[in-house]
Image (cartoon, rainbow, N blue to C red; front, side, top):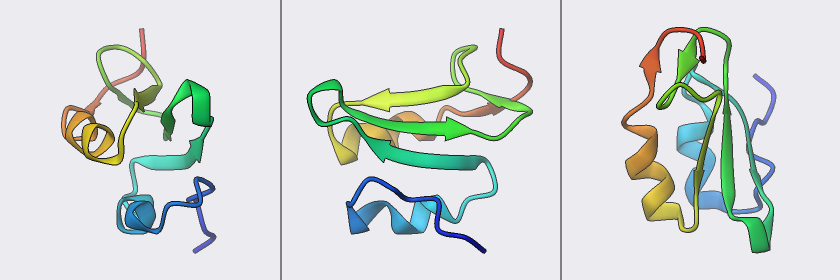
Length: 69
């Protein structure tokens, strides 16, 4: 399995292995992001965004099956 965690934050390595995750990255001044695999969404969006690792992990718990809208 290829590494999907491009954030530089090792604490996100475990969640990067989740099959719902396509890619994780850090935009620093624009926060942390998780791009979701096709068929998953968080509040209708194809990405999860947060300003901290803890908030990102908490928000990721709300990912559900279904296409973004």
